[in-house]
Length: 198
Ligand SMILES: O=C(O)CCC(=O)C(=O)O
Ligand SMILES: [Mn+2]
Image (cartoon, rainbow, N blue to C red; front, side, top):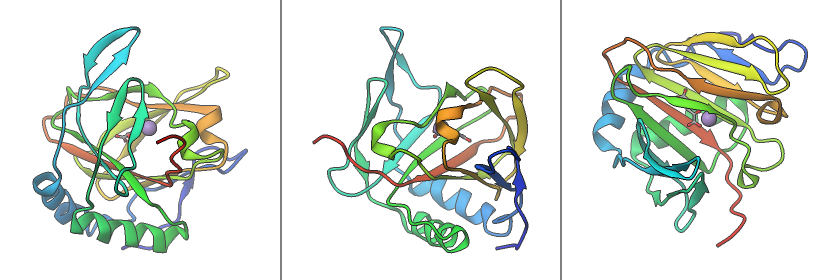
């Protein structure tokens, strides 16, 4: 783990913090281990009333029986592979917050992406703290204020950690647009999950 200082992306509120090289030493091993060990799934979502296959692979690591539902997707929980436990402990130690779940996405090439959204489901709590760890290819990530205003574009290299906390999910949307890179990327979005219904 390197001891780099965060870059504050929203100086007014200080709720979006980027540590560009926090886990650059560990990133390559975690990427290759997780690519092999995670039971990747291709989920379908309901978007504007139509079933669509997600343009990425995903896995939801959480406690037994803790399903994560949004946009017509129901992620069944899968056990935590060892490298993910190692990464979680390292992230928790650095930022001083505990996480009980992780949504993991595998973008096999630049053609795979995630569209504009906020992670603001009730099950994430009123002020979710999301620690987003990037592994593999560097990709551009964008944030736009919900009230309108300038879109922020940042690069997320392997080993970077983006912290989204406080009211940031209420004030901002984010996405990972398609790109021309050929290499794959894994994103781990550590969260604290509070199931709201059985
Ligand atoms: O891949 C990323 O950097 C973002 C993933 C994301 O927004 C999510 O899983 O909710
Ligand atoms: Mn998200």
